[in-house]
Image 1 (tube, rainbow, N blue to C red):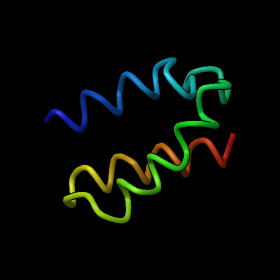
Image 2 (image 1 turned 45 degrees about the vertical axis):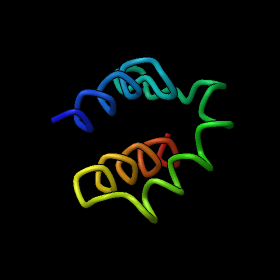
Image 3 (image 1 turned 120 degrees about the vertical axis):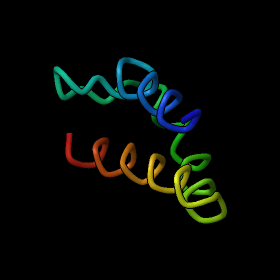
Length: 59
């Protein structure tokens, strides 16, 4: 639940803005951290991190 809440905040204007399809400047320093989480986190956290990365790359 915590991972979903954190991912929602990051997707709602933290590193990307889902509704406008915008990648924000904060995504640059966040990318290595998200990749590390995706590699070493538990499954729910990994999934949230990967979704943020994929969305940022799509935008």
